Image (cartoon, rainbow, N blue to C red; front, side, top):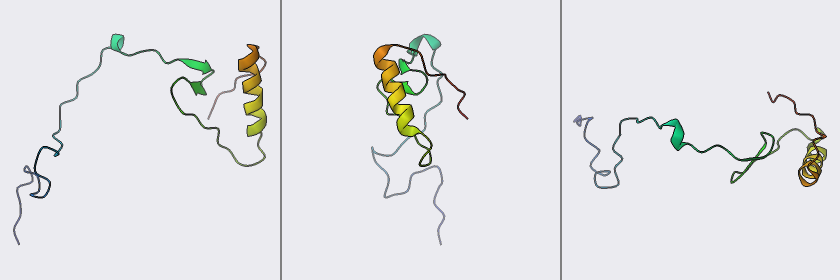
Length: 83
């Protein structure tokens, strides 16, 4: 039984496709863009969101109310803290 050098990649993985770890470089705050929200914290531009809950908990009613609030511009839905 031979033990290979852990610093070198296995022979079947060698080549340009092998991933080489890079040191972490922190981003400066000015380079990060602000997130664009359409309605509260649930609907963000260019992202997919889901409303998931057990049956009969009011998901359809919530989605209809949010759609009407976004279309009309009225803020009649009270925001609650998500847990």
